[in-house]
Image (cartoon, rainbow, N blue to C red; front, side, top):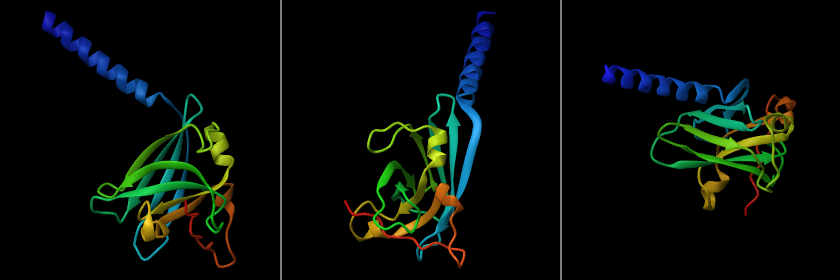
Length: 167
C-alpha cells in the first residue's frame, strides 16, 4: 500500500512540474521567417513566446544545418540592410546537429530590460552567422527582419543583407 501511495505521489509531482512549465507562458507568441542569406541552404523561423513575467523565450529552428558547429545568433537594431547595426541581444548559438537554440530574453546588451511587447515594437533583425570571428563572422547563414522591421520590403520584394559591425 505504501508503494502505491509513493507511486501516486511521484506521478502527481511530475504532472504538477510539467503543468508549471507549460503555465509559465501567456499563450502569446510571434513567429518570423529566417531566409537563406548566403550560398548555404539554411532557412527557418524564430518564435518569440511571452512569459507570464513579461520576459520572452526566443526559439530558433533552422533547416539545412549539420555537423557539430555552433552558429552565433544576434538580434541587431535596424533592419537587415542597416550597415554596421548594433547588437541588441546575443541569443544562444544554434547547434548545427539540431538546428535549434533557446534563449530567455529579459534584457538588451546595454543592460536595459525588455519585455515581450517592447521586443515586438523594436525595429530589429535576426542574423545567424557561420562563425563567431574571422571571415566566418561575415557569412550570414539565415536572417530575417523582426518587430517593426518585418513590415519593410524593397521594390523587388527583398531587402539586402548588410554585413554586421566588427567588434
